[in-house]
Length: 452
Image (tube, rainbow, N blue to C red):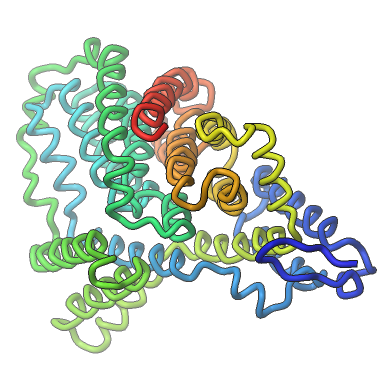
């Protein structure tokens, strides 16, 4: 007996452990892996690697097939951007931007909240959301203390802005990297396809947050004068490194924009840019210091995320090879009756709801082959573009819905609580859930008007 699927390997029953059905074994492994990831009782990279290993040991995949299932372009893009962020962070440019934003707003609490939200969204469009929050939140807490006002509204709008801004580009959020690599969508495709609606969503969220908090925020003249007296330039620790980092980042972004013209994949661009910046950062130092700086850069790579991706790719590939994904695709087609409009709205809202309660990375990884499977019924790969945008918007913006919906949310909450600032699940979700519904409604309207 064989499990058959277009594009999938034929898996002999005799090859699978105890002669069980390959599909049954793969589903069991995926179910256990995802339940443990959602439960969050153990490091998710360990769970994903164990799940991937189980696919091989159980006979669902061979080692060679498992390796073919790993998307090395996504891993290279993530790794390269992490190194670029690590080195750039040393120069203090992010702290400079936070102080500069506060002073441009004349130390007005409402103005600062808006400026920090905009800065966070812009940074998140080119850097990892968690990294952005780690860089901006400490300065935000400091400014709030100086002004003598509650930090929660500032941190809240920054978390929302990080997830909104991250949805605008290929490199802004890991789910987008997965989608871009799997669907062959470029940096420009994401900018043209998603940035217009993200600008509208960001403007709407900023206006609503101002109505909720901005008008009631106040600070004394003395406190505002203290913030205005801060020297933003002193936050920059290394001007040479600042110039080098900004230059390399600009070239990397330009190369990502022109990736199709120059014939390079995003992963190659990011890794080469990271290597160039490491070289520039090391040239002026002695050998001992060079080793230390390179070690620091590699040490700042989020290896937990990298190995989480490795295991997850293998787990999902094992499920795909059994034909289960194709069967689910046929079920989805039947449920939406081949109607692209219905499919887009189902993917958008289902992605948002599920991403509000579980990590959006494993969810997107599982959805990608499912969407691919329904391409023939909708007219081919070109017809899938609105579905890819629906998946991206739902997964990225849905993460704003609850405190556990995105890593950036939990990062901000942890930093706030260490400073004695209330930032619990109920408090966050009370404001976040309705604002997320508004953003999803705007996305629905955008997708309908532009693509359907």
